[in-house]
Length: 267
Image (tube, rainbow, N blue to C red; front, side):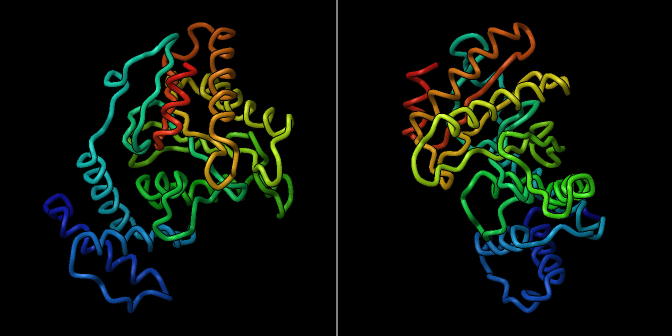
């Protein structure tokens, strides 16, 4: 049945199912327009705690999200020019990239962003991967809490690897970047470098030969954009020289024009 549904029918179905899944918003009035329905669906996905969902609903969610991503346009690495030594800079939505791995700037709870429609990369990745991603993150965190205690939070620069579900990428590397609360310190700079180095090491350990990095710790974590770009390029370039042939492509994925300028000057 689901294969015969149009994309609009899938959207209508999912909005009602996700509303019914929510005690607080089950009586929410559904907008008539497509954009309004998309906002409602994304918001309900964003606030949903990780728990079981009916397989039939998940199947249609997967079909809907894969079609949304196809509509947005999947970007292959062959479409992105190499600047030097297997390193590229690409401006755009990381959820469109068909790399072996994409990097998510996560928080220490590792469950994604719960703010409806937030524009952070954590929210975007979880939205277009589907609710299974939050559920997997929860399972991994539960196992870590069994080992390290109920108050365990993911430390800075320690990557977690998950499936990418409906995203074109194969895997997602979730990593907590350093937070600049007052002033930039050498320790914070070292922590950011560790984010890039540890992610690349994890990729090699799991036979992932291409990775797209977001601008870790910039934005709400307040790491200065230019210095973050310098550390990212220096760290990745050094790692690539020290591990020849281990990584076929590293993409610095930028969203803002400011970051694009910095990275293109540095690479």
